[in-house]
Image 1: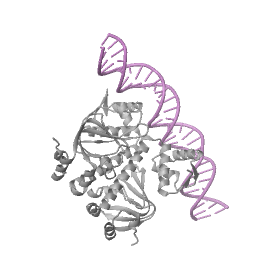
Image 2 (image 1 turned 135 degrees about the vertical axis):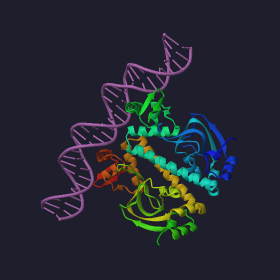
Image 3 (image 1 turned 30 degrees about the vertical axis):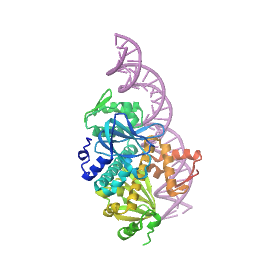
Image 4 (image 1 turned 90 degrees about the vertical axis):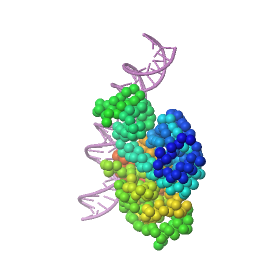
Length: 208
Length: 208
DNA sequence: TACAATTTGTAACATTTATCACATAGGTGT
DNA sequence: ACACCTATGTGATAAATGTTACAAATTGTA
Protein backbone atom coordinates (compact mmCIF):
# COMPACT_ATOMS: atom_id res chain seq x y z
CA UNK A 1 0.00 0.00 0.00
CA UNK A 2 1.65 3.20 -1.10
CA UNK A 3 -0.43 5.66 0.84
CA UNK A 4 1.69 8.40 2.24
CA UNK A 5 -0.86 9.70 4.69
CA UNK A 6 1.75 11.33 6.87
CA UNK A 7 2.84 13.61 4.08
CA UNK A 8 -0.63 14.62 2.90
CA UNK A 9 -2.19 14.76 6.36
CA UNK A 10 0.70 15.87 8.56
CA UNK A 11 -1.54 16.64 11.52
CA UNK A 12 -2.65 13.00 11.90
CA UNK A 13 -1.13 11.14 14.84
CA UNK A 14 0.78 7.91 14.21
CA UNK A 15 -1.92 5.93 15.96
CA UNK A 16 -4.55 7.45 13.68
CA UNK A 17 -2.54 6.73 10.56
CA UNK A 18 -2.23 3.12 11.69
CA UNK A 19 -5.96 2.87 12.21
CA UNK A 20 -6.63 4.30 8.78
CA UNK A 21 -4.14 1.96 7.17
CA UNK A 22 -5.76 -0.99 8.91
CA UNK A 23 -9.41 -0.14 8.32
CA UNK A 24 -9.91 2.09 5.33
CA UNK A 25 -9.72 1.04 1.72
CA UNK A 26 -8.26 2.84 -1.26
CA UNK A 27 -10.15 3.36 -4.46
CA UNK A 28 -9.01 4.77 -7.77
CA UNK A 29 -11.22 6.87 -10.06
CA UNK A 30 -10.70 8.33 -13.49
CA UNK A 31 -11.63 11.74 -14.82
CA UNK A 32 -15.35 11.95 -15.42
CA UNK A 33 -16.35 9.52 -12.67
CA UNK A 34 -19.11 10.69 -10.38
CA UNK A 35 -18.16 9.49 -6.92
CA UNK A 36 -21.21 10.83 -5.12
CA UNK A 37 -24.66 11.76 -6.34
CA UNK A 38 -27.31 14.00 -4.85
CA UNK A 39 -29.72 11.90 -2.81
CA UNK A 40 -27.40 8.91 -2.56
CA UNK A 41 -26.76 7.37 0.85
CA UNK A 42 -23.32 8.09 2.19
CA UNK A 43 -21.43 5.10 3.48
CA UNK A 44 -17.92 6.48 3.74
CA UNK A 45 -15.95 9.53 4.61
CA UNK A 46 -13.63 10.38 1.75
CA UNK A 47 -9.99 11.50 2.02
CA UNK A 48 -8.23 12.63 -1.14
CA UNK A 49 -4.75 11.23 -1.83
CA UNK A 50 -4.31 12.47 -5.38
CA UNK A 51 -6.22 13.97 -8.27
CA UNK A 52 -8.85 16.65 -8.28
CA UNK A 53 -12.57 16.58 -7.56
CA UNK A 54 -15.25 19.17 -8.11
CA UNK A 55 -18.26 19.50 -5.83
CA UNK A 56 -21.57 20.64 -7.30
CA UNK A 57 -24.97 21.56 -6.07
CA UNK A 58 -27.72 20.22 -8.35
CA UNK A 59 -31.24 21.39 -9.03
CA UNK A 60 -34.29 19.51 -10.23
CA UNK A 61 -33.78 20.48 -13.87
CA UNK A 62 -30.29 19.07 -14.28
CA UNK A 63 -28.42 22.23 -13.34
CA UNK A 64 -24.93 21.72 -11.91
CA UNK A 65 -23.69 24.66 -9.91
CA UNK A 66 -20.00 24.58 -9.01
CA UNK A 67 -19.33 24.88 -5.28
CA UNK A 68 -15.68 24.04 -4.59
CA UNK A 69 -12.68 21.83 -5.29
CA UNK A 70 -11.55 18.85 -3.26
CA UNK A 71 -7.77 18.51 -3.39
CA UNK A 72 -5.13 16.08 -2.07
CA UNK A 73 -4.83 16.38 1.70
CA UNK A 74 -8.48 17.36 2.02
CA UNK A 75 -11.64 15.51 2.99
CA UNK A 76 -15.25 15.74 1.91
CA UNK A 77 -17.00 17.79 4.59
CA UNK A 78 -20.42 16.59 3.48
CA UNK A 79 -19.48 12.96 3.98
CA UNK A 80 -18.34 13.79 7.50
CA UNK A 81 -21.34 15.86 8.42
CA UNK A 82 -23.73 13.17 7.34
CA UNK A 83 -21.78 10.53 9.19
CA UNK A 84 -23.70 10.26 12.43
CA UNK A 85 -27.10 10.02 10.84
CA UNK A 86 -26.14 8.26 7.61
CA UNK A 87 -28.04 10.84 5.66
CA UNK A 88 -28.24 11.23 1.92
CA UNK A 89 -25.81 13.41 0.06
CA UNK A 90 -26.74 17.03 -0.58
CA UNK A 91 -24.10 17.40 -3.28
CA UNK A 92 -22.63 15.76 -6.36
CA UNK A 93 -18.90 15.04 -6.63
CA UNK A 94 -17.20 14.61 -9.99
CA UNK A 95 -13.58 13.61 -10.65
CA UNK A 96 -11.80 16.08 -12.97
CA UNK A 97 -8.33 14.57 -12.68
CA UNK A 98 -7.73 10.85 -12.05
CA UNK A 99 -7.94 10.43 -8.30
CA UNK A 100 -7.02 8.05 -5.49
CA UNK A 101 -9.31 8.20 -2.50
CA UNK A 102 -9.30 6.68 0.96
CA UNK A 103 -12.73 5.48 2.00
CA UNK A 104 -13.32 5.47 5.75
CA UNK A 105 -16.44 3.57 6.88
CA UNK A 106 -18.81 5.92 8.70
CA UNK A 107 -18.87 4.10 12.07
CA UNK A 108 -15.09 4.51 12.32
CA UNK A 109 -15.24 8.16 11.39
CA UNK A 110 -17.55 8.66 14.35
CA UNK A 111 -15.58 6.48 16.76
CA UNK A 112 -12.28 8.22 16.02
CA UNK A 113 -13.76 11.58 16.95
CA UNK A 114 -13.54 10.52 20.60
CA UNK A 115 -10.34 8.51 20.39
CA UNK A 116 -8.04 10.62 18.26
CA UNK A 117 -7.61 14.28 19.00
CA UNK A 118 -5.90 14.85 15.66
CA UNK A 119 -8.88 13.35 13.82
CA UNK A 120 -11.30 15.47 15.80
CA UNK A 121 -9.38 18.62 14.97
CA UNK A 122 -9.11 17.68 11.33
CA UNK A 123 -12.85 17.11 11.06
CA UNK A 124 -13.73 20.35 12.83
CA UNK A 125 -11.28 22.27 10.68
CA UNK A 126 -12.69 20.69 7.53
CA UNK A 127 -16.21 21.74 8.55
CA UNK A 128 -15.10 25.25 9.33
CA UNK A 129 -13.12 25.89 6.17
CA UNK A 130 -15.83 24.46 3.90
CA UNK A 131 -18.53 26.42 5.64
CA UNK A 132 -16.52 29.56 5.09
CA UNK A 133 -15.90 28.69 1.46
CA UNK A 134 -19.61 28.16 0.88
CA UNK A 135 -20.33 31.51 2.51
CA UNK A 136 -17.92 33.12 0.05
CA UNK A 137 -19.83 31.47 -2.77
CA UNK A 138 -23.08 32.82 -1.34
CA UNK A 139 -21.63 36.32 -1.42
CA UNK A 140 -20.57 35.97 -5.03
CA UNK A 141 -24.05 34.97 -6.20
CA UNK A 142 -26.06 37.11 -3.78
CA UNK A 143 -24.21 40.37 -4.31
CA UNK A 144 -22.37 40.26 -7.63
CA UNK A 145 -23.29 40.40 -11.29
CA UNK A 146 -22.18 37.78 -13.78
CA UNK A 147 -18.99 39.55 -14.84
CA UNK A 148 -17.61 39.54 -11.31
CA UNK A 149 -18.90 36.05 -10.66
CA UNK A 150 -16.98 34.87 -13.73
CA UNK A 151 -13.77 36.46 -12.47
CA UNK A 152 -14.31 34.84 -9.06
CA UNK A 153 -14.86 31.51 -10.80
CA UNK A 154 -11.70 31.81 -12.87
CA UNK A 155 -9.64 32.82 -9.85
CA UNK A 156 -10.75 29.78 -7.89
CA UNK A 157 -9.91 27.49 -10.79
CA UNK A 158 -6.52 29.11 -11.10
CA UNK A 159 -5.86 28.49 -7.41
CA UNK A 160 -7.00 24.89 -7.73
CA UNK A 161 -4.78 24.00 -10.67
CA UNK A 162 -1.92 26.23 -9.63
CA UNK A 163 -1.33 27.18 -13.23
CA UNK A 164 -2.17 29.97 -15.69
CA UNK A 165 -3.90 27.78 -18.23
CA UNK A 166 -7.46 26.64 -17.57
CA UNK A 167 -8.81 23.74 -19.63
CA UNK A 168 -12.41 24.86 -19.79
CA UNK A 169 -14.87 25.41 -22.61
CA UNK A 170 -17.28 28.33 -22.51
CA UNK A 171 -20.15 25.86 -22.26
CA UNK A 172 -18.61 24.19 -19.21
CA UNK A 173 -18.20 27.50 -17.43
CA UNK A 174 -21.74 28.54 -18.32
CA UNK A 175 -23.15 25.31 -16.91
CA UNK A 176 -21.21 25.63 -13.67
CA UNK A 177 -22.36 29.21 -13.19
CA UNK A 178 -25.90 28.41 -14.30
CA UNK A 179 -26.02 30.85 -17.17
CA UNK A 180 -25.83 30.55 -20.96
CA UNK A 181 -22.81 29.98 -23.15
CA UNK A 182 -23.33 33.21 -25.08
CA UNK A 183 -23.17 35.29 -21.91
CA UNK A 184 -19.87 33.67 -20.92
CA UNK A 185 -18.41 34.07 -24.42
CA UNK A 186 -19.22 37.77 -24.39
CA UNK A 187 -17.89 38.38 -20.87
CA UNK A 188 -14.70 36.44 -21.63
CA UNK A 189 -14.26 38.58 -24.75
CA UNK A 190 -14.44 41.69 -22.61
CA UNK A 191 -11.85 40.28 -20.22
CA UNK A 192 -9.61 39.51 -23.18
CA UNK A 193 -10.00 43.08 -24.48
CA UNK A 194 -9.05 44.33 -21.02
CA UNK A 195 -5.89 42.23 -21.25
CA UNK A 196 -6.81 39.94 -18.33
CA UNK A 197 -6.58 36.76 -20.37
CA UNK A 198 -6.15 35.22 -23.80
CA UNK A 199 -8.79 32.96 -25.35
CA UNK A 200 -7.95 29.72 -27.11
CA UNK A 201 -9.99 26.79 -28.24
CA UNK A 202 -10.80 24.68 -25.15
CA UNK A 203 -8.54 26.59 -22.84
CA UNK A 204 -8.06 30.02 -21.36
CA UNK A 205 -4.68 31.55 -20.73
CA UNK A 206 -4.66 33.87 -17.73
CA UNK A 207 -2.36 36.86 -17.99
CA UNK A 208 -2.36 38.23 -14.45
CA UNK B 1 -31.88 31.48 37.32
CA UNK B 2 -34.92 30.54 35.32
CA UNK B 3 -33.27 28.72 32.46
CA UNK B 4 -35.18 25.68 31.47
CA UNK B 5 -32.46 24.08 29.44
CA UNK B 6 -33.94 20.61 29.79
CA UNK B 7 -37.09 21.66 28.00
CA UNK B 8 -35.43 23.56 25.17
CA UNK B 9 -32.50 21.19 24.78
CA UNK B 10 -33.98 17.81 25.69
CA UNK B 11 -31.02 15.88 24.32
CA UNK B 12 -28.60 17.39 26.86
CA UNK B 13 -27.51 15.07 29.67
CA UNK B 14 -28.05 16.14 33.27
CA UNK B 15 -24.32 16.47 33.79
CA UNK B 16 -24.09 18.77 30.80
CA UNK B 17 -26.98 20.92 31.98
CA UNK B 18 -25.27 21.28 35.34
CA UNK B 19 -22.05 22.34 33.67
CA UNK B 20 -23.86 24.92 31.59
CA UNK B 21 -25.69 26.23 34.64
CA UNK B 22 -22.42 26.53 36.53
CA UNK B 23 -20.27 28.08 33.80
CA UNK B 24 -22.31 29.91 31.20
CA UNK B 25 -23.93 33.28 31.62
CA UNK B 26 -27.30 34.53 30.42
CA UNK B 27 -27.71 37.73 28.51
CA UNK B 28 -30.86 39.52 27.42
CA UNK B 29 -31.17 41.45 24.16
CA UNK B 30 -33.92 43.57 22.67
CA UNK B 31 -35.19 43.70 19.12
CA UNK B 32 -32.75 45.51 16.91
CA UNK B 33 -29.63 44.55 18.85
CA UNK B 34 -26.77 43.23 16.77
CA UNK B 35 -25.21 40.44 18.80
CA UNK B 36 -22.47 39.55 16.37
CA UNK B 37 -20.82 41.53 13.58
CA UNK B 38 -18.86 40.42 10.56
CA UNK B 39 -15.16 40.47 11.37
CA UNK B 40 -15.66 40.50 15.13
CA UNK B 41 -13.79 38.02 17.29
CA UNK B 42 -15.98 35.30 18.68
CA UNK B 43 -15.63 34.67 22.40
CA UNK B 44 -18.69 32.56 23.09
CA UNK B 45 -20.90 29.90 21.69
CA UNK B 46 -24.49 31.09 21.76
CA UNK B 47 -27.55 29.06 22.77
CA UNK B 48 -30.97 30.59 22.26
CA UNK B 49 -33.46 30.40 25.15
CA UNK B 50 -36.13 32.71 23.78
CA UNK B 51 -36.75 35.26 21.07
CA UNK B 52 -35.75 35.22 17.46
CA UNK B 53 -32.50 36.06 15.69
CA UNK B 54 -31.72 36.55 12.03
CA UNK B 55 -28.37 35.64 10.54
CA UNK B 56 -27.04 37.71 7.62
CA UNK B 57 -24.14 37.60 5.26
CA UNK B 58 -22.74 41.07 4.59
CA UNK B 59 -20.84 42.53 1.67
CA UNK B 60 -18.43 45.45 1.48
CA UNK B 61 -21.08 47.92 0.35
CA UNK B 62 -23.44 47.49 3.30
CA UNK B 63 -25.58 44.72 1.78
CA UNK B 64 -27.31 42.42 4.27
CA UNK B 65 -28.31 39.12 2.75
CA UNK B 66 -30.62 36.99 4.88
CA UNK B 67 -29.29 33.49 5.55
CA UNK B 68 -31.40 31.87 8.27
CA UNK B 69 -33.21 32.17 11.57
CA UNK B 70 -31.89 31.19 14.98
CA UNK B 71 -34.72 30.02 17.23
CA UNK B 72 -35.13 28.85 20.84
CA UNK B 73 -33.50 25.46 21.32
CA UNK B 74 -30.92 26.19 18.65
CA UNK B 75 -27.31 27.30 18.69
CA UNK B 76 -25.22 29.48 16.43
CA UNK B 77 -23.24 27.11 14.21
CA UNK B 78 -20.76 29.80 13.25
CA UNK B 79 -19.83 30.46 16.86
CA UNK B 80 -19.19 26.73 17.32
CA UNK B 81 -17.19 26.29 14.16
CA UNK B 82 -14.91 29.17 15.00
CA UNK B 83 -14.42 27.91 18.53
CA UNK B 84 -11.18 26.01 18.23
CA UNK B 85 -9.32 28.72 16.40
CA UNK B 86 -11.08 31.75 17.88
CA UNK B 87 -11.62 33.10 14.41
CA UNK B 88 -13.57 36.17 13.43
CA UNK B 89 -17.23 35.96 12.58
CA UNK B 90 -18.22 35.44 8.97
CA UNK B 91 -21.77 36.55 9.63
CA UNK B 92 -23.90 39.22 11.30
CA UNK B 93 -26.61 38.31 13.81
CA UNK B 94 -29.51 40.65 14.56
CA UNK B 95 -32.24 40.21 17.18
CA UNK B 96 -35.72 40.51 15.69
CA UNK B 97 -37.68 39.54 18.82
CA UNK B 98 -36.39 40.23 22.32
CA UNK B 99 -34.10 37.34 23.15
CA UNK B 100 -32.44 35.57 26.06
CA UNK B 101 -29.18 33.87 25.19
CA UNK B 102 -26.79 31.56 27.00
CA UNK B 103 -23.17 32.45 26.38
CA UNK B 104 -20.77 29.53 26.65
CA UNK B 105 -17.07 30.51 26.80
CA UNK B 106 -15.22 28.97 23.87
CA UNK B 107 -12.73 26.87 25.86
CA UNK B 108 -15.63 25.07 27.54
CA UNK B 109 -17.40 24.49 24.25
CA UNK B 110 -14.29 22.69 23.07
CA UNK B 111 -13.70 20.77 26.29
CA UNK B 112 -17.25 19.46 26.47
CA UNK B 113 -16.93 17.92 23.02
CA UNK B 114 -14.79 15.20 24.57
CA UNK B 115 -16.57 14.94 27.90
CA UNK B 116 -20.26 15.03 27.01
CA UNK B 117 -21.58 12.82 24.28
CA UNK B 118 -24.85 14.75 24.18
CA UNK B 119 -22.97 18.00 23.62
CA UNK B 120 -20.89 16.44 20.87
CA UNK B 121 -23.99 15.18 19.11
CA UNK B 122 -25.74 18.50 19.47
CA UNK B 123 -22.79 20.36 17.96
CA UNK B 124 -22.44 17.96 15.06
CA UNK B 125 -26.14 18.08 14.38
CA UNK B 126 -26.11 21.88 14.49
CA UNK B 127 -23.30 21.93 11.95
CA UNK B 128 -25.06 19.51 9.69
CA UNK B 129 -28.46 21.15 9.68
CA UNK B 130 -27.04 24.63 9.13
CA UNK B 131 -24.80 23.44 6.34
CA UNK B 132 -27.82 21.91 4.66
CA UNK B 133 -29.86 25.06 5.15
CA UNK B 134 -27.12 27.16 3.59
CA UNK B 135 -26.98 24.77 0.64
CA UNK B 136 -30.73 25.30 0.16
CA UNK B 137 -30.10 29.02 0.13
CA UNK B 138 -27.39 28.53 -2.48
CA UNK B 139 -29.88 26.69 -4.66
CA UNK B 140 -32.43 29.45 -4.38
CA UNK B 141 -30.00 32.15 -5.52
CA UNK B 142 -28.02 30.06 -8.00
CA UNK B 143 -30.97 28.53 -9.86
CA UNK B 144 -34.07 30.63 -9.31
CA UNK B 145 -35.33 34.02 -10.46
CA UNK B 146 -36.45 36.69 -8.04
CA UNK B 147 -40.12 35.67 -8.02
CA UNK B 148 -39.32 32.18 -6.76
CA UNK B 149 -36.68 33.48 -4.40
CA UNK B 150 -39.30 35.77 -2.88
CA UNK B 151 -41.69 32.86 -2.36
CA UNK B 152 -38.88 30.86 -0.76
CA UNK B 153 -38.09 33.82 1.48
CA UNK B 154 -41.71 34.22 2.57
CA UNK B 155 -42.07 30.51 3.25
CA UNK B 156 -39.05 30.48 5.53
CA UNK B 157 -40.34 33.47 7.46
CA UNK B 158 -43.70 31.81 7.80
CA UNK B 159 -42.03 28.71 9.24
CA UNK B 160 -39.97 30.82 11.61
CA UNK B 161 -42.87 32.76 13.06
CA UNK B 162 -45.36 29.91 12.85
CA UNK B 163 -48.05 32.35 11.80
CA UNK B 164 -49.74 33.64 8.65
CA UNK B 165 -48.91 37.27 9.21
CA UNK B 166 -45.44 38.53 8.42
CA UNK B 167 -44.40 41.89 9.82
CA UNK B 168 -42.17 42.98 6.97
CA UNK B 169 -41.98 46.08 4.83
CA UNK B 170 -41.21 45.80 1.14
CA UNK B 171 -37.95 47.64 1.74
CA UNK B 172 -36.88 45.14 4.41
CA UNK B 173 -37.53 42.21 2.11
CA UNK B 174 -35.69 43.91 -0.74
CA UNK B 175 -32.65 44.54 1.44
CA UNK B 176 -32.54 40.95 2.68
CA UNK B 177 -32.77 39.59 -0.87
CA UNK B 178 -30.35 42.20 -2.19
CA UNK B 179 -32.70 43.69 -4.75
CA UNK B 180 -34.70 46.91 -4.96
CA UNK B 181 -37.94 47.78 -3.22
CA UNK B 182 -39.78 48.34 -6.51
CA UNK B 183 -39.01 44.82 -7.69
CA UNK B 184 -40.39 43.36 -4.46
CA UNK B 185 -43.50 45.58 -4.60
CA UNK B 186 -44.22 44.39 -8.14
CA UNK B 187 -43.67 40.73 -7.37
CA UNK B 188 -45.77 40.92 -4.20
CA UNK B 189 -48.53 42.53 -6.24
CA UNK B 190 -48.45 39.59 -8.62
CA UNK B 191 -48.64 37.13 -5.73
CA UNK B 192 -51.62 39.08 -4.37
CA UNK B 193 -53.34 38.91 -7.76
CA UNK B 194 -52.74 35.16 -7.80
CA UNK B 195 -54.44 34.95 -4.41
CA UNK B 196 -51.37 33.76 -2.54
CA UNK B 197 -51.42 36.62 -0.05
CA UNK B 198 -52.95 39.91 0.93
CA UNK B 199 -50.90 43.09 1.23
CA UNK B 200 -51.24 45.50 4.13
CA UNK B 201 -49.13 48.35 5.37
CA UNK B 202 -46.12 46.89 7.20
CA UNK B 203 -47.36 43.35 7.09
CA UNK B 204 -48.24 40.61 4.68
CA UNK B 205 -51.07 38.19 5.25
CA UNK B 206 -50.39 34.78 3.77
CA UNK B 207 -53.40 32.93 2.43
CA UNK B 208 -52.03 29.46 1.80
C1' DT C 1 -56.13 69.75 12.43
C1' DA C 2 -51.97 70.33 10.02
C1' DC C 3 -47.59 68.71 8.99
C1' DA C 4 -43.91 65.47 8.51
C1' DA C 5 -42.23 60.96 7.82
C1' DT C 6 -42.82 56.43 6.12
C1' DT C 7 -44.70 53.03 3.14
C1' DT C 8 -46.58 51.61 -1.04
C1' DG C 9 -48.00 52.01 -6.13
C1' DT C 10 -46.60 52.79 -10.65
C1' DA C 11 -44.79 54.65 -14.97
C1' DA C 12 -40.74 55.35 -17.84
C1' DC C 13 -36.43 54.05 -18.94
C1' DA C 14 -31.61 51.78 -18.62
C1' DT C 15 -29.04 47.77 -18.03
C1' DT C 16 -28.26 43.02 -17.62
C1' DT C 17 -29.19 38.54 -18.80
C1' DA C 18 -31.59 34.97 -21.66
C1' DT C 19 -32.85 33.16 -26.05
C1' DC C 20 -32.72 32.43 -30.96
C1' DA C 21 -30.39 32.33 -35.22
C1' DC C 22 -26.63 31.66 -37.81
C1' DA C 23 -21.76 32.35 -39.33
C1' DT C 24 -17.03 31.12 -38.70
C1' DA C 25 -13.13 28.61 -37.01
C1' DG C 26 -10.53 24.61 -35.45
C1' DG C 27 -9.95 19.85 -34.95
C1' DT C 28 -10.79 14.81 -36.31
C1' DG C 29 -11.21 10.91 -39.10
C1' DT C 30 -11.72 9.04 -43.76
C1' DA D 1 -8.90 17.33 -49.57
C1' DC D 2 -13.31 16.42 -47.69
C1' DA D 3 -17.02 15.80 -44.57
C1' DC D 4 -18.28 16.23 -39.87
C1' DC D 5 -18.38 17.65 -35.23
C1' DT D 6 -17.57 20.85 -31.66
C1' DA D 7 -16.35 25.36 -30.03
C1' DT D 8 -16.62 30.11 -30.49
C1' DG D 9 -18.28 34.85 -32.25
C1' DT D 10 -21.94 37.90 -32.82
C1' DG D 11 -26.26 40.25 -34.01
C1' DA D 12 -31.20 40.71 -33.03
C1' DT D 13 -34.59 40.50 -29.83
C1' DA D 14 -37.09 39.30 -25.51
C1' DA D 15 -37.47 39.17 -20.68
C1' DA D 16 -36.00 40.23 -16.09
C1' DT D 17 -34.15 43.32 -13.07
C1' DG D 18 -32.35 47.91 -11.64
C1' DT D 19 -32.98 52.96 -11.50
C1' DT D 20 -35.25 57.31 -11.36
C1' DA D 21 -39.04 59.96 -10.48
C1' DC D 22 -43.12 61.02 -8.45
C1' DA D 23 -47.94 60.29 -6.62
C1' DA D 24 -50.95 58.41 -3.18
C1' DA D 25 -51.97 56.37 1.17
C1' DT D 26 -51.06 55.70 5.99
C1' DT D 27 -49.23 56.78 10.38
C1' DG D 28 -47.28 59.53 13.93
C1' DT D 29 -46.91 63.81 16.08
C1' DA D 30 -46.69 68.74 16.96
